[in-house]
Amino acid sequence: MCGITERVERMERTKAAEKGAGVGGQHARPGVAVNRAMATFSPADEEKQRGVRRMKLTATGLLVFVALVYVLSTWAHNSGAGTWAAYVAAASEAGMVGALADWFAVTALFRHPLGIPIPHTAIIPTKKDQLGVSLGEFVGENFLSEDVVRQRLRAVGIGSRLGAWLAVPEHADRVTAELSTALRGALTVLRDSDVQAVVGEAITRRANAQEIGPGIGKMLDKVVADGGHKRVVDLVVTRAHDWLVLHRDEVMDAVEGGAPGWTPKFVDRKVGERVYRELLRFATEMRDMPGHPARSALDRFLTDFATDLQSDTDTRARVERLKGEVLGRGEVQDLIASAWTAVRSMIVSAAEDERSELRLRVRASLLSLGSRMAGERKVQDKVDQWVEDAAVYVVTTYRTEITSLITDTVASWDAEHTTKKIEANIGRDLQFIRINGTVVGSLAGLLIYTVSHALGA
Image (tube, rainbow, N blue to C red):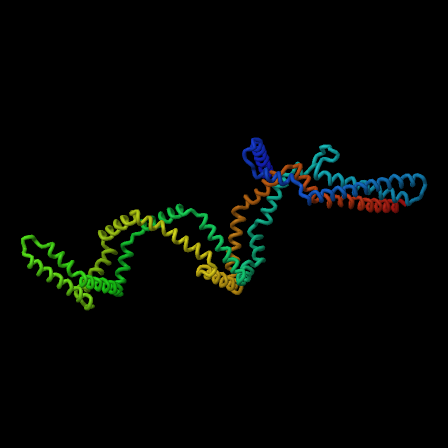
């Protein structure tokens, strides 16, 4: 009870603070919106309220009727009408008592009877906050417990039902379309500049945090061991040979231009021709001889370099410095950032095209997943377990917040309008209590009088 009292006092202070803030009219509170909703009577509420009035008139009319019967039967009995008048008087007297007692009980729920502040009356308007706290605690204890949640979800069989639903092609198409719409919307809302900055920072941070030398060394070692570099060498020497064939004059001019000025021209010419022939011969032999010594030397160089990348500290440090210089260049950063634009355009286009590979694969995956969920017990149990664990986590972690939503909402309602709304919705049934009290009281009074009269006789 102390805990309930403290929560009620806290809610009353919150209500007072919201009421004070509402005077300024600067910000609308959620509680204000709720109060407005509780203060508004819908056409259905008005119709229910008219039904309550009719039932009140009926119950009150029955009370007046038994009172009139009591007066007449008492007069008849005193006038010597016979024993029957006494029985009728006893029944009608007990009926009046029952009707008045139930009228008092029903009225005490919503207001003070006859406006007299009798203790323990006007229960709903005066105990509204306590009722909200009790309702929240009842919901938390009986509906938001782990056992109840698991039991109810296990009885539903979400895995099998969801699988059967997804296995229908029309449903898979619908889910695929909805996912595509959500994906397009999300990509449209995202600002390219923000995403580009995040992508660039993530790639740069990951690259700086990971040393690339050993990885490159292992990859190069495997490439050399498998002979994968030989095709690159073949391409390079072939292009070099073709270039030498087409640019003979340029090579000779370069050699002659580098000769000393005091040498005769014909000597420079002869040297240029000899250099050119040697270069062309070297390129030709490299191209045509797989076992050329230069190729073997290149293999040894690449193997040693791969080893240094993995184990030599200086080589690894130079590679890291080179990596940092490359990543720090503006052109590289722009290239990394622009990758997001290309990826986004590709994804949006694929999401919009119903026949795109992306949507076809998503649809096929959904159908496959649905078939497995519908037919495989293990998959069903796994899905059910995931759903149960997620639901249990939510209700156990946020149980206080969920129950506070109930208690705070009830506390924010206006007492007068809440009373009127509740009375409009359940008041008609409560009037039947008055009617039943009149009838049952009459029957009870008749029985008691009969028994008493029989025992007295």
